[in-house]
Amino acid sequence: MALSWQSLIDRITNLAKNQRQKKRGTEFLADTVALILFFTTTGIINERMIAGMSWDQVLHARLIGAALMIPVARPYGIWRDWLMQRANPSRGSQLLWDSMALVSFQVPIYAAIIAFSGATGGGLVRGTLGAALMMLFLGRPYGAFLNWVRKLFGLPPGGDKPMSLDS
Image (cartoon, rainbow, N blue to C red; front, side):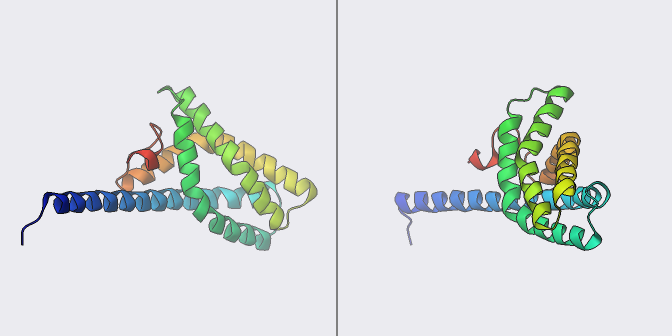
């Protein structure tokens, strides 16, 4: 059975398309794993020690948080990569842009999570401000952790341009 040139081109095109789809799935998985691992840990600390939430409320917040992290992780990764294009190689610039990315994207989501989980009034304000401060300081450590997880998944670290636009 002889292949026509068009048939060969179609097969190569389909193979390339499948590779791009597989890469997008890997990007989604890597960003989701990183976000869930990192922020489940830091969320528990903030909710219990700073917001003063009960263990039941913390559990509720973490379950909601994990469920919300699944659809939010990859868009955050794209947002971070887009903002990190503005960073230069200096530590200060990396810290600034990673922190700005995290605070601007995650704090509003976090405030909604703890409000829905029972934080009210002063606890809600303290929890949101605590999260904002934590995320300000954790922006770069999380960015480095995200890059490390991406590397484990065989992906580039991001920051040059959104990985989903590479292909």
